[in-house]
Image (cartoon, rainbow, N blue to C red; front, side, top):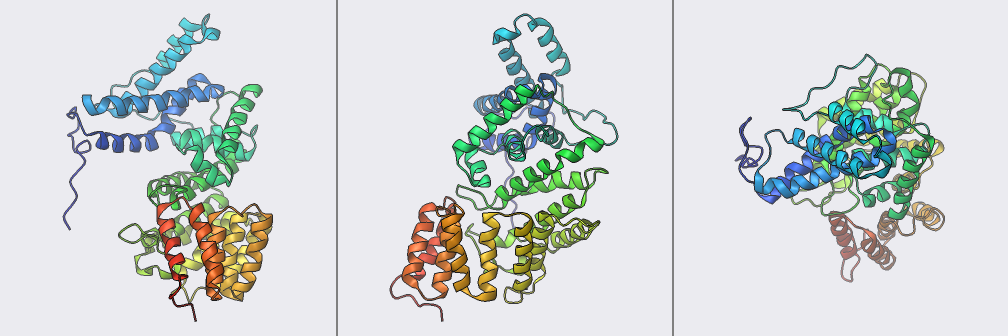
Length: 450
């Protein structure tokens, strides 16, 4: 197969300033840089400004990225784009401080201190040597800082996802099964709580990591899920988000203090689910459901890694929700076929999972196993209860599953009504196409299941 032509930006020789590039090429580079570098840049700025001024650091980095999108197509991409972004974000922060009246008296000393602490690097930055027991990854370090014990867990995750992972409020609303307005209020409350408490920016190390670990794991879990199944848009998968969540989880797993069984369980879950990504879509990007996937396309190397981390997660007597989710994923990955899947064990695992972490999404997933074990009638009864009492009446997956189970009972009219409602609620193009295909099976003249 012929290799694709290299991006004109990436193909530029090291040490040279590339010529002006297309806006699309610059946007691709900038988006990649933002995903990889935003956390590090925000971390460096916030380390000087203090955590209560996290918003200023975040805004400065985002504004620097916007300026890159405006200037680089005409002027060319700088030799060291990361250094350019850092210098620009630093200057923007200084300009903002100059404009603030409450900094007027201390302005000269403060700006001099900021400029000294954040010099314009001539080239790629080098990590500062860290003490034993500290987290060495820039983004992960700031993630621990965001997950301060003064904040509720949901605010910790929201703050980290918004600041470090670049998720929009719509994506975060989908992750938390709430509204964008609720997410905006959650972020405002988090920042206000930090300001009111006078929380200083601090990077925990050693034993101080443990109280913040749940918040960090929850953030990585939500980041991975947004990559595994995006909440809106034209693509079903964002493999870059999955890869970043796995990378950070690997850093945690190798840490002498943070590498707990829960971390290995979460990493196992991510690896096992990622192993099935190549078969989740066809060559056109259309969704391929689990029962129709070509299991030969599953990544056996990732499955082996996932099983190894699941074994490491078995140390001690802890059985977290990550353990149980990883065990469910392992059942799928190790099954020779869809028909050969141990659905009874999966149903039992879901019952155990719901006992320690009630979740409407887990309830929905459980109904799939229940239908395979006990038939669609019981699954429909449970789904209707969830629809009426768990706030899932306007969730597309509720109606998709109800439609599927009604179709299995040959109730084509009821199935079509649910598929039509699911189609109104779904926001991801491949899922809409998949639901539309299910709806077409219910049209007059189509054959009902035997």
